[in-house]
Image (cartoon, rainbow, N blue to C red; front, side, top):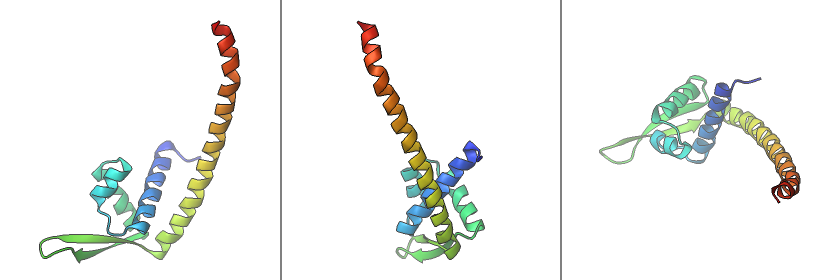
Amino acid sequence: MMSRRASLQEDIQFQVLRRLHETPDLSQRTLATELGISLGSINFCFQALMKKGWVKVQNFSHSSHKMGYVYLLTPAGIAEKSVLTTRFLKYKMEECGALREEIKQLKAELPRQSKLAR
């Protein structure tokens, strides 16, 4: 079983790959804000993704005064995004099932609790 920390890192990597696939010129700062994590954490994630060969970076000029970056998913990155999407979907479906069961149990408890409160 995956540790909570490893699971969180995998979730962040999945979200980053997903967003970069949609918007390759997204800045690390914007992505950190969107995901609600620190800029340092995003930078660490980008370094790991580049080291794994899933993302490559290219410079481009926005204007004569600023340099920007485009983050491109490599073929290995696209393949890994598919694997992570499948795993994420399975996890969310299991979580949804567990929530439905919990809601069912809470609804069943409600009539008993209201009788005791009288």
